[in-house]
Image (tube, rainbow, N blue to C red):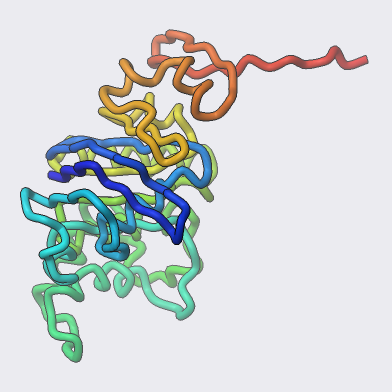
Length: 259
């Protein structure tokens, strides 16, 4: 569980997060929404302990995050970045094994126990057939699943995902988010930042919406994610259409007739 109380953070004299408070429990997928520059990534950096000069309090499983060592945080929280090519060539198995490094001393090699954990993480996500492939040569969707498997190998129950589908095609976006949604149903706590509010409608249990560093909305997705909020966040007029597959966000646009 994560509990944030009155979190305020500034770079020099610029306030990025202002009195942010929310909590998210086990088995919940919370989507974090808002335009660029509203503090989504800074919020993650504070939770991960990369930024500690904040006012307010961050609790991880009831413990003040400031009192947790890097290793202790790694036992509790895993970070899943956007897809990117690593500087060196690694196999998929090696990439997933990196999630177990907090379990061993800095100069040690992974043991059989760590290898077994990595293999189980790949099996859980259905990517065990990729184990010996070069990570840089698999598809973007497969790479993102490898990052998720690495997080599972870390055996942390809290997952922070920073725009994990931003570079993926439509099909891979849905595939990855379906996996993430299942992880929440399996008991993981997932915080996922996204620029696509439709993803939140389809997959998230709740939303945290940020605007200019302030909390614009927090609560259950279908209750909070209304046209008025999207206008506030993005300056865009939309409708919510109810379909057999759930609500769909329809932007209201003005198009000149093509002559």
